[in-house]
Image (cartoon, rainbow, N blue to C red; front, side):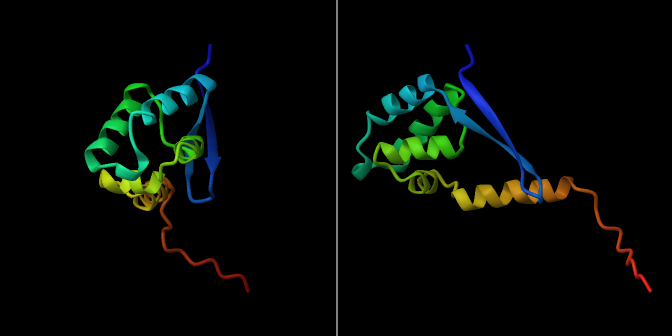
Length: 112
């Protein structure tokens, strides 16, 4: 049985992959988050949550963000607590994709 579905995107800047959560993984996410109070979450709690996701092979993506939000948690806040802002991670992905594209050699194409 396939537990996850990978989605590939080409943003024009580079490509990246996100993971769709299966029903089984969605249930696991709910189970993990049920151990914590979203109003009293600590940095240590956030680290434990993401470590549990990682152990189960659950990767970041739109479906994970939605599942976390549905359980009353702020995904961006959790990432910030562990020192990984979502924006910084997205920016790093874009930068890596740009570095992997062929460099412009500085040639100027002039049509007369």
